[in-house]
Length: 150
Image 1 (tube, rainbow, N blue to C red):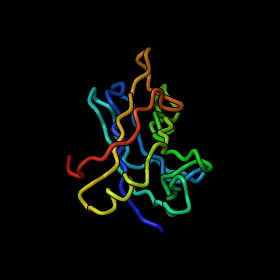
Image 2 (tube, rainbow, N blue to C red):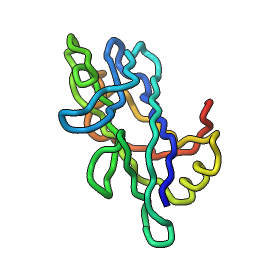
Image 3 (cartoon, one colour):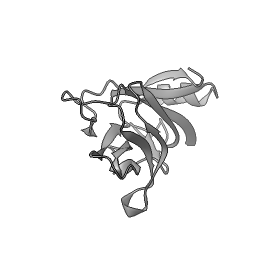
Image 4 (cartoon, rainbow, N blue to C red):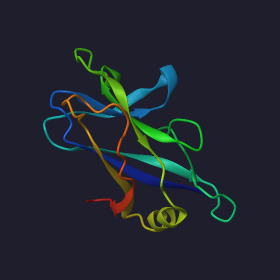
């Protein structure tokens, strides 16, 4: 089985004046896309993810695509920050790693059966000191089904 679904990452209240982008590709060949500058409000990114596997034989679904990073089983999506997002004058530079874990076969099947649904996660955009949140999202609240137009 191979299906494509849309995932949405909502970055909650990232620090203003900093650019954030969704990382497409990996290594030196990556490019930040959907780049947005934070202005004190939530920002969101959407991208397609390919789901591979079979619920009968695979305990967990596999994920791939041009926005998916990392080795199995800990695949993730990167949000590029500051200089990594192409903002040359920024004092910030890094990535936020959004894990693709905790997504069940039941959830995937529900989303792929409707063109109106996406998988969504909401993650903090700022660290405790007010700087952009970098590294792996902690704590990670997981993925939930939402409407495409929500």
